[in-house]
Structure formats: structure tokens, C-alpha cells
Amino acid sequence: MIELSRLSMDYRIGDESVNVLDDLNLSVEAGERVAIVGPSGSGKTTLLLLLAGLEACRRGDIRINGVALGDLDADGLADLRRDHIGIVFQSFHLVPSLTALDNVALPLEIAGRSEARLRARAMLAEVGLETRGRHYPSQLSGGEQQRVAIARALVHEPSLLLADEPTGNLDAHTGERISRLLFDLQSRIGTTLVLVTHDNSIARRCDRVLRLHDGQLSDGEVGGGDALSR
Ligand code: ADP
Ligand code: MG
Image (cartoon, rainbow, N blue to C red; front, side, top):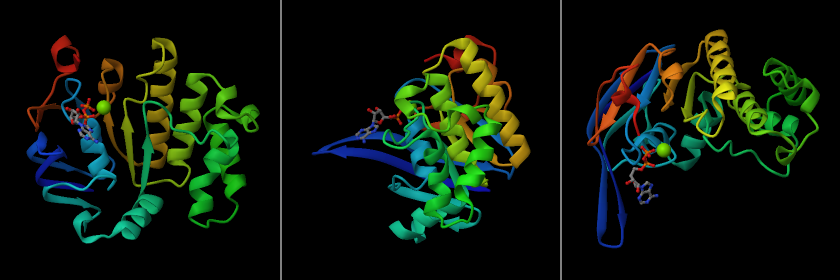
């Protein structure tokens, strides 16, 4: 499903460069759930952005479903995301001017799929928000907004779900509910999951935990404070 080989990434601002990922390798099987942990600033978000084709790597190769992202132009990357990838961000990133229902329907409408609103309504019900379809994001709690974001990320049943600290802005109880919901939907849809988290209870639900440190991934542990510490 995912093959990263010898991936390197740096950000350049003026004549300064920040090396973030350094010769990193990773393969993820279809349907696998992989948690990425690591200190703040270690490049976890950067890695997800590269997987989504939202940033271009400096060196190395990224393959999703056998397709090399480096071979795709901006339109090709947009098509790949539209058809195969769902993304959940820590800070929800809902469209403020659209209702919950329209936020969820958006990926289907962009893809020109039929019955977008009907499917979006069913997905909203799956995240327990059938009575909130007409609310705007500002009229929803943080946990509700994240449920809308999860519904939006999964409504087109992507083969790959990327989640960046999906419970990072939520209290522990709400985070636990969101986490359970995410994994329930993940297993129903059978989507491959790569998620970044500081939350032990989320990492524990994954098949593998990897730690990003000094630009490289290594086997991480759940439970010990160290693996998940910021
Ligand atoms: P994490 O998600 O693990 O906290 P990030 O991937 O957000 O880490 O950032 C990794 C490093 O790259 C940090 O040192 C950050 O300052 C730097 N960085 C992230 N995005 C940019 C950017 N757009 N331009 C320049 N530097 C960036
Ligand atoms: Mg981050």
C-alpha cells in the first residue's frame, strides 16, 4: 500500500535549511494500522503531508498503491487524494461557511459522485451526528467537529486514511470516544491507517508503533512514557 524508500526532506527558508527526514524507509501493508510517535518538531506532520502529496520530497521515492508520487503533476496528486486518501487534522480544518452535512458531502461532490448528500447524511449518522447536519462548525463542540472531520475523511471510503493527532485538541474522555469511532470505521471500511499521536490508548490500537527521531523511523513502544513523550 505504501512504500517509502530513502526519503529525505528539508525545508529551506532563505539560505537556511532545516533537515527533517533523512533517508527514511517505510512499508505499510493494505489494511494495516500504523502509529507514528515522536517528539514535537521531529517531522511527523511533514511525513503525513508527503504521503498525501501535499509536500514534495527532496530525495527518495514515495509509492501509494504502486504509483510513484514523483511521477504525478498537481492534478494527478489531487486525483489521487480525491479517489484514495482521507485526511484528519488535529485542528479539524472544516470549511466554516458550510454546514456539517455539506462539509461531509464535499469530497463526494468534488468527485462528481451521485447522491452525495444522501451518502453524507448516512456517514454523519455513523458518527452519531444525524441531528447536527444543519449546524455550522462554529456551532459544534470540538469533539463534534472532529467527528464531522472523520466523516468527511471517510465518506468516499478511501484506501488510505492519514490522521495527524486526531485527539490532540480534545479532552481525554472525548478523545477516547473519537479514537474508538475512528478505529470502528477504519475496520468497517478496511482502510489502511497511518496516524500520528501522543496518545497511548490510540497507539495501542494500532498494529505497529514507529518512532520518528533524527529523521528516521524505528520500532517504538507503547506504554513506556518515553515512546510517546513530546
Ligand atoms: P511534528 O509534526 O513532528 O511536530 P513538523 O513536521 O511539523 O513536526 O515539523 C518538523 C520540522 O520542520 C520543525 O522543525 C518545523 O519547524 C519545520 N517545519 C515544518 N513546516 C515547515 C515549513 N513549512 N517551513 C519551514 N520549516 C518547517
Ligand atoms: Mg505535527
